[in-house]
Structures are given as C-alpha cells and as structure tokens.
Length: 164
Image (cartoon, rainbow, N blue to C red; front, side, top):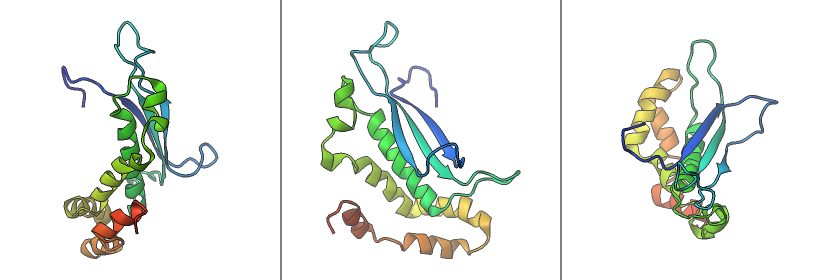
C-alpha cells in the first residue's frame, strides 16, 4: 500500500482476535490521536489521525485459518467505516476533527455505506467462495442465500437509519 509519492492521510492498528481476560468484549474503534494542524511538527504540516480497530474474532487454531462469521464480517466493515470517517476528516483542529465535530445525523453514513457491501452480490460471492466454502457445513449457494436474506436492500438502509 506504500506507493511512491502517495500521501499518507492516516494510520491505523488492527487487533482482530479475541483474547479473554486481556481486552474488553465487543468490537470498537478508538482514536489514538486526532488530526491537528496546531500540533504539527517540523517534518509534518499536520498531525495525521491514528486509530485502532479492535475486534473479537475467533483466532486461528493450529495451521487452520480463522473463519469469519457473517457477523464478524459485518462488524469489520462497520469498524472500517468509522475508521474512514476518522482518517478522511479535513478538520484542522483536534476538537473539530473528533466525533463532536460531526453532525449527529451523518456520523453513521460511512458505516452504513460500507456495511452495504456485505449484502452486495459480488462481495457476497467473493465471501462465499473464500470463507464460507471452507467450512463445508452448508452448500455455498445456500449459505449465501441465508445471509443475503437477512435484510432487504432498501428496508435495511431505512432500518439502520432509524427511519422504519
């Protein structure tokens, strides 16, 4: 991802696996430092935002990969959406670049946009072909229909927005 002359706009840490007794339950995004022009340095004209994405997915066992459930995928996409909001802010001051500087009705927009990819057919097919097909418990096509059928497109967006 590091390409010559491509500006870095933010940095993040990813902690994907559960560690009972070592970290709290749930999935969340934490701001490590916010974007700030006031706290710039001689090397950087603006302090870049840094955030962490903390998930509680089942860790891999032995030489087997960690298999994500649909809920894990949905949480990952939601957390990345929150992370993008933190990363892509153009506010120059810490107080304005945090959650308090965003209109309440637009806070969840990046999350909802990214979560919609979980229900996108091409994304679902890719998920099905790589992750769900490994389990062999349910036929991949049936598994796709099961998780695709949880929410209808428009109804899901309205429900997520609190409009239905």
